[in-house]
Length: 346
Ligand code: SF4
Image 1 (cartoon, rainbow, N blue to C red):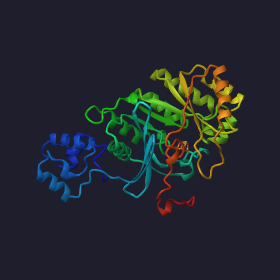
Image 2: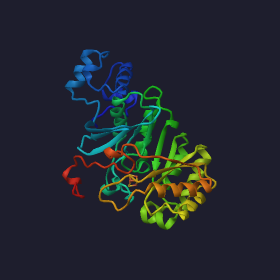
Image 3: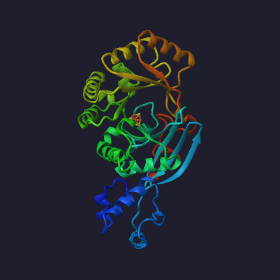
Image 4: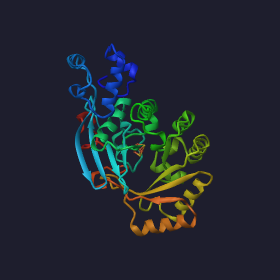
């Protein structure tokens, strides 16, 4: 493994055969700041730095190979040590708050039909250090980035072990010290993972990509619903809420003519009854080759009117990063893909 990210103090002592344990703390504090070159770790003895270099000990396994920017978002293309590519995005809101949107897998097995990542299929899970390093790359753009959403490429709850190790590393007060409530895991509705997350009882936030509250429509759009239909999803959310006492976010990607009618609004209101949840309405971000369209302003207005009458708690979010394909559902490594991954011809 070519990274020191994700390792504990003791693991670094052992990996580097350090004679003095406090040197592991010094190394960790450099790593948290994004300093990964041994020469720049100036408080370490030069003998130690030279030894680490001569033994070829890498501190970080990935590198940024492309960057695109628009007004509210910066998207980074990150190359991993096996040449796989993942994307992560730094999002800025009106107040200047920065949020990192981080990937958990290369590609995704879930195949949601509105999502570009879903067209890739699953290539592999990310290791904990590959998840952590995305945050390090994003913090090199702005060290104040203090919120994380696991909403990039992949289904985070299908890679729960690595995800939790990364989350714990982010949370560690001696490391990035990011509170759990500033981290949000976004799932397409993997009920087994939601239940595991509830048992861990960390206080981490949960978002669910709902898209439709009608089983037939949702099963057509999202394969996950065939495995875990809406009543099972709702039971899992209720039990998550029972232990976590946190409001859940329901992501509702607006698809023209698919999930914006009056019946869809009623189904959504019905699904939300008994849940403490807010709906994020996000007009679909166009993805080349996918069959959907974004709804018109009039279609959105009618749908939100229906939701108002039904007293549904929602926010309408216009997508950030759409111009750089960095918005929700648009991430996929199309800039430079290994030949073996290029089944879709990109
Ligand atoms: S929406 Fe999420 S879970 Fe569904 S295919 Fe895309 S990345 Fe995977």
